[in-house]
Image (cartoon, rainbow, N blue to C red; front, top):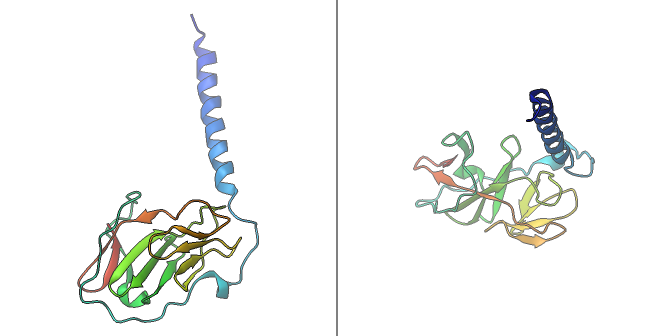
Length: 162
């Protein structure tokens, strides 16, 4: 027969160890180098809203704020994208009217990507680049693609998480 005190202690210790391990993994993002604010977010350029946006996306997960507008189509340049630092998302428009959304957290060491240019989503920490069309790794050291998020584009040009 097991002692209830020892069982409760093991449960608490196991839960505490799991919480500490999760915190340690979260704390390992990036090289600790701070970037100036001017390098932290790509400046969006205006683009005309498309007449029929392509909103067909595969979903990686359904975040809590689904349905809330995160951007406007006019804020996402054709052939580029916009990094949404607060939401930790990046929205791209690889071709006119085709919008994609990915996590802005680099899969190498958890830094936030900071710009979209020349067809890639770029991470400032170690130089990883991801394809703006599908989030695939274009240049390492990252080895895994950015996770895609499902979005919807409304007739008024607002982009929301689905």
